[in-house]
Length: 410
View 1 (cartoon, rainbow, N blue to C red):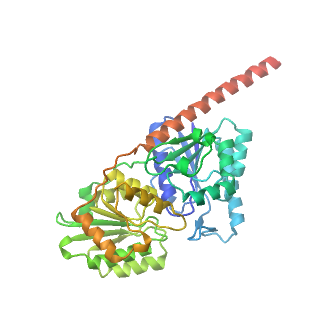
View 2 (tube, rainbow, N blue to C red):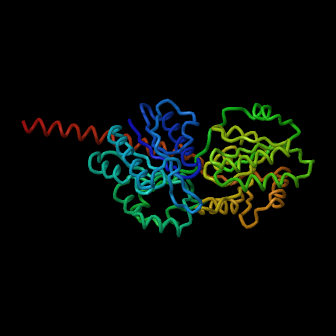
View 3 (tube, one colour):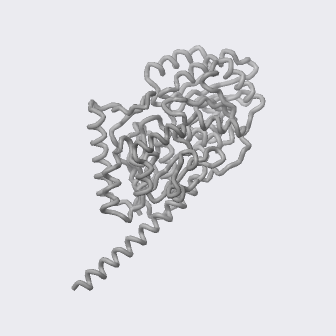
């Protein structure tokens, strides 16, 4: 059985990390499955890929704070680059002949680059199942509904897609209701729960030994996701460290993220020279090991990082980004309301506020107690496996019918 996967990739590492986790789980659970992944993420080569998974690297795009999509590296116009990506995607579909096409986030892809491929499946491979994967929150309902209406996403989902899999839960955000899905789309939609993460590759003891954290010391992990807009978070954290009482005995690991601009990264390294208890890293494909080893996490509120913190059952302080979308802000507000994590919102983000929350979390940690489904991987596998079996059966039936029709015509 063949699965073609499209990963939306214009900002940060969240989408590619989520899709790789799904691919790895599907390969471990579905016999004789092979997966071809399509993505423009510049960090694809930095991840461990399981047997059965390969990828086609698309030219990189980037979405700035304004939300406008631009070409990241090539000296080409955006329309030229989208056309190139579209042709690469269509060629992969024609030659790979998948049983199922799993699309991340945008039904027509970035700037409609999937339109030709979707039409090809509809016309030439009608048995191939199309599935849209949505994280719980995309943006504010107003912005999302306007975008989906403008780009014809609602119509595309009703006409071409067989299912919509939502890796979230109603208790945090009612995706179907908030984004005004029609009755047809509601019938196609499945809430799968959040994606739990497997334990890291290294034990808590090994990580703390590598970082030279003694049993009497606290370890604070700071992670601004991909890092493209993470400089302020790290800068304010370093300022908050100066205000922390020495009695807290803290060591810090700051993972800047591979997308942080070089000049900002250099400023952080220079500033960290004044803090002997601070270590700086750029990227790890095993963030879960460090989350498990930390006493407190300071992070943005991206989907993957929040799922990892929940999986490790760790106290954290969330500082959501508010641009180019309101996704993290909405998630943080919902989880703060449920008592899962304390948060600092942009209008109140300052060293003193962060210092106070760090002291509270170090001395009286708020461990997440609200229980909801974290079986996102298992449920995604269940629905995709059913559709793959359906495709296989339909193709066998259609092949038998064609053979019978040919025999009768003779």
